[in-house]
Amino acid sequence: MSAQHRTAAPRTSGSLARSRPRYGEFAVKAVLLLAALVSVVTTVGIVVALLEPTIEFFSEVSFGEFFGSTTWGPLFNPPAFGVWPIIVATTEITLIAIVVAVPLGLAAAIYLSEYATPRVRKVLKPVLEVLAGVPTVVFGFFALTFVTPLLQDVFPFLGLDGKNALSAGLLVGVMIIPIVASLSEDSMAAVPNGLREGSYALGASKMITSVRVVVPAAFSGIVAAIILAISRAAGETMIVAIAGGFKSVFTLNPADEMATMAAFIAQAGSGDASVGSTAYKTIFAVGSLLFIMTFAMNYLSARMVQKYREVYD
Amino acid sequence: MAILSTPRSAVQLASKGRPLREHLFRIALLASLAVAIAFLAMLIIYVVEEGWPRLDSTLWENQPSIRRPETAGIQSGIFGTLWIIGLTALMALPTGILAAIYLEEYADKTKWYNRLIELNISNLAAVPSIVYGILGLGMIARWMAFGFTVMTGAITVSLLVLPIVIISAREAIRAVPPSIREGSLALGATQWQTIYRQVLPASIPGIATGSILALSRAIGEAAPFLMLGAATLVRFNPEGVWSTFTVLPLQIYSFIARPQEEFAVLAAAAIVVLLAILLLMNSVAIWLRNRYQKRW
Image (cartoon, rainbow over all chains, first blue to last red; front, side, top):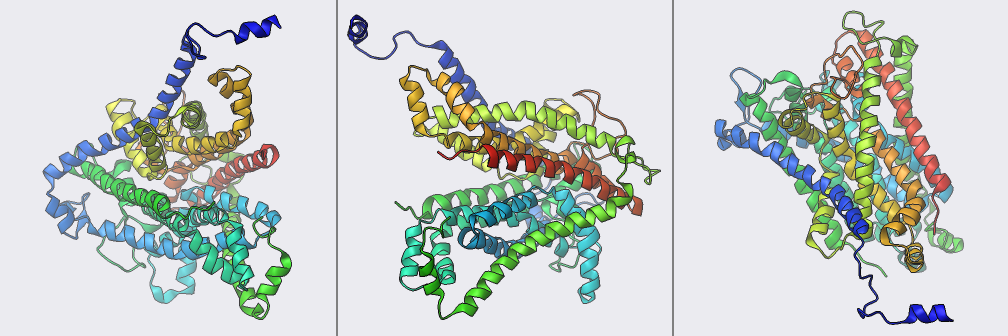
């Protein structure tokens, strides 16, 4: 009784909060915030690392030459700095990858979310995760030594080079299937059951429900997944360096060898350009371009989710 | 799970009258999944078959050699990868988990700087790995003058996997129900005591799963190291954090780049070793998740 009385007695300060600050708790919060700030420092580091050599690059090579001409060969003598061939190659390989990954990834997502029983899903999802965990250098090896010879045998009329954009693009596509599939499945799983049941109640079949109700309801998440997959494909390095090659010719033929932006960075960065030369600074200029492109796509993807998400409940 | 709550008879009723199209659609969906799985199986069978002649103890006992590809090994790559992964685990995991605790437990979402940190992390997660290579080259190797050493490689890869660690750790922490926190606080524990004694132990399985997956991403990464001067055939194991090094994926890349047939076989054998390590890590992560993850 008396103990209860003591605790119930009003404090002189008039507040229930502890009067003496807990310095330990403050220190913990400070350390945690510091850890979170590492990520901000990383972004600043990337921007600074890219910016300075990029500015120096554009003082040596004009903007007009970089974006205005179509011959690329910073490592040649005389060098050429028209960036379009590697942008076109990046776009083309990304396009091939998307053509492979979007139908397969979406179909896999619909199956896993709408058709698979929990037991089947428990087996199939880890398989997709393993596919997502295969190192890209392995895909590159497979593209160069298995897929390209196979395509050359089966479709000799394509006239595939030993290194070509087609098999590089196909394998980049396989690489991004798990991204499309798992992110789309997440957003389909978030569609409330009431919508499906309403559709069944109106007499729609399972296929109609999946295609006309669930997919449209999850559309913003699906588009965000595809944009993210595009940005991964555009930045992919090892597959395109191994199976796509380093030659940069201004061409649209997927049977030809072509270097993407990332492949150029890998080639010049792994010792083919001497430090301080214009060719060396080109690495950073192309890196900036790649960073800006992927950054824009990631931002777009995040905005899609935020702005067009259907909110239920 | 979604389907279970819909009465089966309703579904059967609904698909009555057009069974063929329904069947074809279902088969098409299954076929798409089968393509992905068959592809994975084909890839594994192919590399095992190709690398089979070299899958013996000389593979990890010998060092790489340009002149004798038929007996060349990958020991320096295995040791380099172990060094990098060890250091990455030491740097990225604590930082990532602490950052996740801050964002989930302390951060006030209405403050602009906390929103900036969140936006920043989701952006970093999608930055191409070759750009991290440029960061390592420009800032760590040259500006901080760490050179092309194990330390530079480990810091670069730590920064690369940090967003993945943070995102997965946040999900694990978020899955702990608020009632556990409220109970602890009501008993007089401070916020940090609550986190340290209740929230963290409850979210350890999820954090461990995410951490293993993040480290397996670090093991398979080759592009950043390409920028860090590790592409050459390093013939010795790293002796410390300031030693030059190579890693397994990069060694594979340098084998593929050589014209002799023996190097293709060696590359395939090295890929089998790499895939075996990754499959093992993946299985542990999946097992952990299935075994320990609770649903509240």
